[in-house]
Length: 252
Image 1 (cartoon, rainbow, N blue to C red):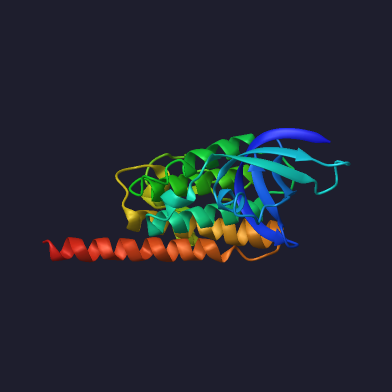
Image 2 (cartoon, rainbow, N blue to C red):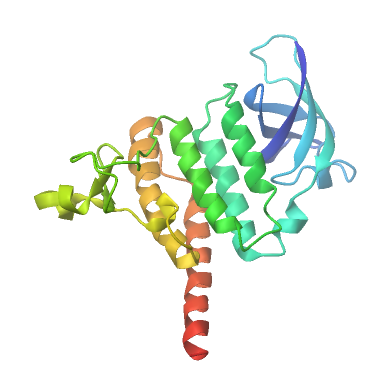
């Protein structure tokens, strides 16, 4: 068996004295692991950084074998991400969620394209948080838990949408909430794309997407807790949002 594809490096771990096993997300072959011979060497190890865009060639005697990779670097992203704490934490969160949610060897080309576009914004820390939020929505959609935020699940109205049903993931208007209002999740404007969004708005919206990631995808489908990297990203972004609020108050 032999194929060639591009891919995003999700993770790597040592295998023996000189080799590493990498887990890569590719458009045509999905999340796919393989051994890189000599991957721990001074020549290859610097290439195998999280988020790196790689040209991959995979070979194995049989399709169900782990196989081996030969790799060439197309684009490194680690150095760019390390220039900003939020971007670095977000990169780690996105890679961890991909490794956590994606079944092995199952192609998800649309999600791959969204993931590559997200990582290509690492040098734009001003755009990164909102882009990451949009990416989480795409991840939920790809995994079968799409949020329907277009109209009220109760009245059918497109006006005054303020909540999300935790059961169905559908929007609910203020009028439609009724006596169930205390059981609904908030629908932040950052999720609907209405108005400008700052870090605090994105943090609030990530609380809502996090509910579906945790309670529907992680607990319901996978049966494991979410990767800690997402919590660290949320904490990092929350601290930046808090610093921004304090700075605004000092300037008033």
